Length: 137
Image (cartoon, rainbow, N blue to C red; front, side, top):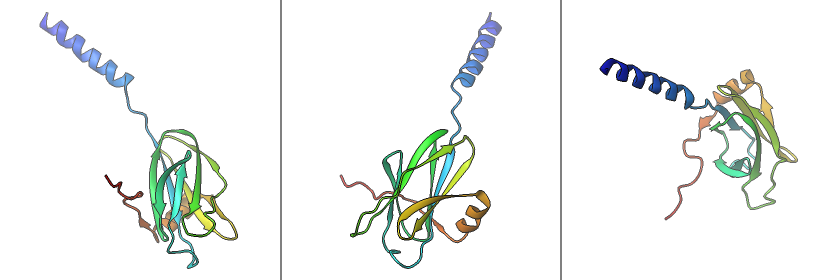
């Protein structure tokens, strides 16, 4: 009798583990390596319309996202035009990384980078540990 109960509990726990297995996320890297113009101003990074990071020059941030399609954009955080880039749709796959590079030319925009190029750029940038300022109570 005790063996039947133990076996039943074991099988139930295995079934529950398989049924509620956590979904694997993908990663999204935002990289900023711009020239001296506007280098003191942090860009605001948005994913699906929500502010997720203040990204300074020569920095990158990493965000875990559920697989599927997401919309990303960035905004100049300075006193000037508050220019926001055109929204860009990206497809995030489980266990894979996407790389976005902020480009500041006549207009502010993002460009998706291939992994080999992104890895070279990441070596020259510092990670952003705390993307958003701490909230004041």
